[in-house]
Image (cartoon, rainbow, N blue to C red):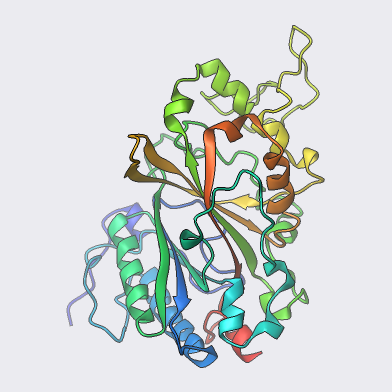
Length: 375
């Protein structure tokens, strides 16, 4: 047998383990390329078929993340034949409707209650929700697409795609040193994320052992929102105006209250004119944990650009993915506050929304979600 190709670069050879207490793709930097995919079970497919699909998906995802050719039912396309794993991660989740379709409503987490409506939402139902969710991230576009195709093909006959969204981030090595990513507005985005070194990180992001329900131990809840940015309007705003909207300097992400990017935001600081350094409606003030009873979530998002709309404006923005142990204590209080108005809301539109229960990682010999199906 011929030797498998060896990755030539650190980007290609970088590998994330598939198995562990948590699923991959929740912590760690977001990769350069991402695919978010929701599927609905096909008519006639129930609990048994869904469990068989998760078994197949687990096998395939584990092989792909190790840089191996999956032993799929179908002939492998060879799209990523020359590449290493390129930090590929594959993450699986269940939507609220999944439990109805599989007769598992008694095991549906209370945290999967529908998100409340927000007045600023302009949601497209066809690009929202879904029975099953797959998040794919990789630092090589062909590796990411290869995983997408392999998992889609494994689902044939059991589940069909409801919606798919494609995103990107800065490539590893594009900056001289690791930096917080920028979004398509040019702002440093993610500075205030909970850090894995924080004492309460696990409690905020992951469901504890013995939680409700028990099968979600080590899991998390993903809020997914497609947020279009009104870039034509934003780019007409002068630099100092943009900085006031966000409450941070654009050049380095430092708060307008002073310091560097990682300096805590001082909401009480006043400028020489006696006015608050950070405006009352600045995005960082409205979203600060101190303004929301300590509510926090781990954001791990992708940018997107889907061409241009009929009016010539870019169809571009953020594929917002937020992780938390409980959406009612993470995403919802912050979004309720934003819904009452922050300066940034004039420049964005929430166009799609979904919430998924993402179970804990698969232990050796397990498939993802096994504790739900067989617990």
